[in-house]
Image 1 (cartoon, rainbow, N blue to C red):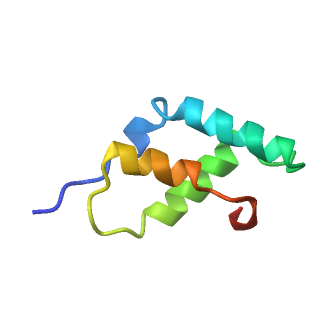
Image 2: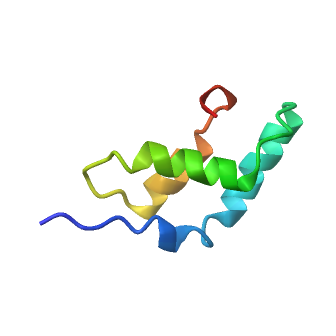
Amino acid sequence: MSEKQQFESWKEDVRPVLIIKLEEFHELGYNRVTEENLWTYCMDKLKKRKEFMPFYAFVDELLSIQPQGI
């Protein structure tokens, strides 16, 4: 039996990570990127996964987002 992902319930928990990543993008000159853009991009990328993803792997995925992907 597979477990259902809890990404939406983790949104507030990972908000500091999103803000750090957003600041990184802005420092690189990508000023149009928003917190919601990062969240949506990550959700679109991860909703295709079939296996359960633990919280630490989810945070790692957020931290690995590169400007070329957005």
